Length: 278
Image (cartoon, rainbow, N blue to C red):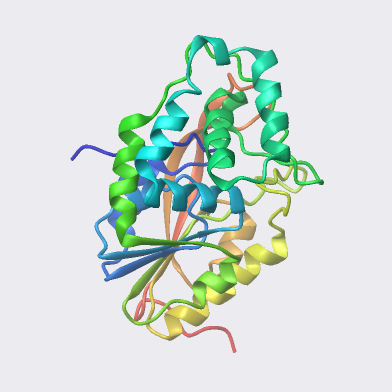
């Protein structure tokens, strides 16, 4: 079966792990994703409904606009993908415009431009909340028209929320399945902990997410979490059934250094999980 790609480039995107995730993701009526990111799991599963959330307000605003103003959005975004706009000078002008822009549609158009023209498709903000990814120097950035239309079609059965993971998990009921893809835990104690957004994801939040998953499974709601395979993640997810998968990823500042690292899929399934720690 053909896999559908997301229209955004996204660090830590789950496209390479889709087969493994789908194999372990329980069936249900509604899928909740508190860390939707680029949405690869959403785009390649067949739930009746989706509740998709992220703490990044630009991302959620973009998704709601693509869902409700598809033609207007695609037409405006297409104009940003020309040889004239693919220079560092124009890129930094558009980046400055984005950081001052208050118009939701224009901001969403600029977000896709920056995502496809910026370095490695990163989404990064400084402490003032300003997007600060440098120019990527790509020969011809790809305009994801087919992917935008597919996303818009699939999004008609989805609701997008800008909120914390705890708020998203509170929406779960006995008809839902939860898939969590939090920002990766560090591979080592000294590893740089890269923030995906102005608010970085702390070790305390990682542990809290696991506690919330335990609470959900005790209420007969299944949860699947993906993360690096480390001593810490194994401790956090000790009540889950753990599946180890290998994924090829750049693990150093040298983008050419790509090797396979182990990733965990932690499945909290009712009946398979011992009751939460007393």
